[in-house]
Length: 429
Image (cartoon, rainbow, N blue to C red; front, side, top):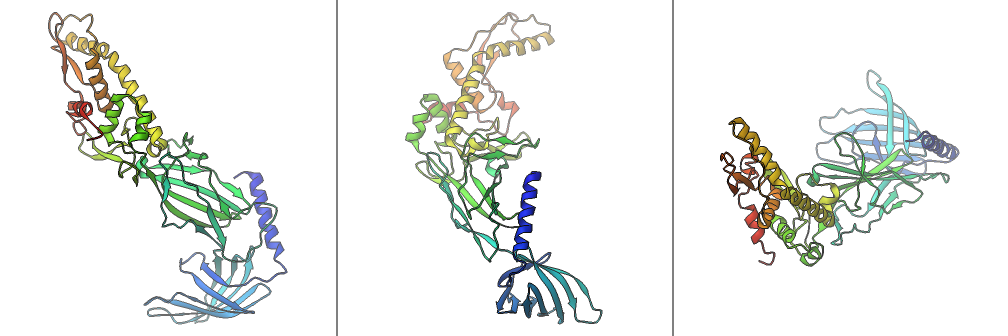
C-alpha cells in the first residue's frame, strides 16, 4: 500500500471516529471476542439496557450478558453456564471505538483472585450477500466470463466518510487443474457496495520465482475467493466455484481446419475442453493422468489439445480457444523438428560409430511425407518415431525404422499405438 493511500485511510478512520463523538452507538447485532471464539455473541439493546447471549448448544458453555450503554460506554455483567464450565460472573467496562465497530476495555472476574485483563469485542458489519455461494459461475462456450455483480451489505449502522471510497474489493483464483496456479486481481477501491469485476485485470502470481505475470486472456476458472474490506478494517469473503462450457464440434472445427490437427484433438480429448459432454456440457477442465518414470501418478495434459509439455498457462486451461492455439503452435514446432530430424540422427549415429572406430557417415536421407507426418505426431505425444538402422553398417546403408524413443525414455507415459490411433480417429464414431 502506498504511503499516500495509508495517510488517506488513517485520516478517514480518524474522521469517522471523531464524527461519532457526540452520537450514540448501539450493541444490536452480532459481536465476536478478539482474539477468541468464532461463535457470535448476540446483543439486543432497548433504550440504554442491553442483553446478550451465545448460541445454545448441547454441552457447550454459554454466555449471558445484561447491562447498560450510556455515552458510548458499555457496562455489563457476563455469566458463564454449562456442564463443565466454571460458574462465575465477570464485570465488563468498555468503550465504543472506530465508528461503533469495536468495543475495547477491561474485564474483572468476580471470584477469589480478582482476575482483571483487557477485553475487545469486534462487530462484523459487512457481508457479501450476492451472488449465492451455492451457485456455480459458468464460463460460456464463446468463451466468455459470466456477467457477475458482487454485492456487500452493511449489517450495522456505520458512519461513511464521504471523501474516500470505503469499500475495497479483491478477487483471488486458485486452480489445482492448472498446476496449482494462483491468479489474482489488483485491489479496487469504490464508493459503491457493489462490484462488477474486470477479468482483464488478472495476474498470475503462482510463479515459483515470485514473478507476477499479467495473463493474456480474460477467462479464468477454479475456486474464486472474493473479499470486500470496509475502511481497511472489517472484511468479509466468500468462495465460489467456476466451471466451463464445452463449445461443441462445429465451433471447434471452425478453428481447427487442418485434418491432422482435428485427429489429434479427436484422440486427445474427443473435442472436450471440460470434463463433461462434448456439446455444451459444463464441468471442470479435462485433465488426464500420467505416470512418470518412477511409476508415480502425476497430472497430465489439459483441455482439447491435452497440453502437457510445456505446462499449459491458466488461459490455456480455461479458454478453449487459447488451448487450441497452443496446440497448433506445438504441432508446427514438432513438424519443423521432423523436417530436420535426419540431421540429428546422423550426429547421434556418428557418435556411436566413433566408439567402435567406424568411419562417420556423410549424410542420411530426409524422411518422406508419410514419415514426416508420423514423426510429427509422435513428437507431439512423446519423443521420436524413427531411427536409422542398422547404424553400424560399414557403408552406412540402412533404412528408417519405427522405433519410438519413449519406449525407453518415458516407460510410464508411452503409448505404442498413439500415432495409429490419431490417424484412425473419427470424431463421429
